[in-house]
Image 1 (tube, rainbow, N blue to C red):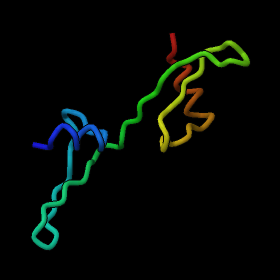
Image 2: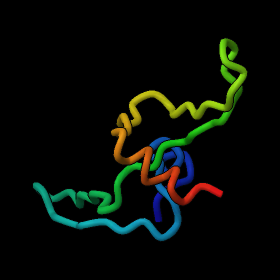
Image 3: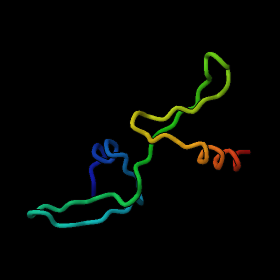
Image 4: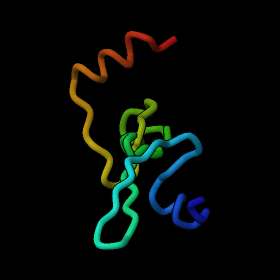
Length: 74
C-alpha cells in the first residue's frame, strides 16, 4: 500500500498498475500508466471564451489531439 501523501504527490490513483523490480535490495515500483494532470476550465479575460489550463509540467497537445477531442465534444 502506498501512503496517501505519496500517492497525491506522485499523481497515483486507485487501479494504477506498476512494474516491479528488485534493485540492490530495494523494491522499485514504476507506474505503467502515464501521469494524469489536473485541468481547470476558466474564462479568458481577453476573449471571454472558455479555456482549459493544465497544471505545470503537463505535455502540450497537438492540433490533431485537440481536433480529436473536439470531435467528441457535445
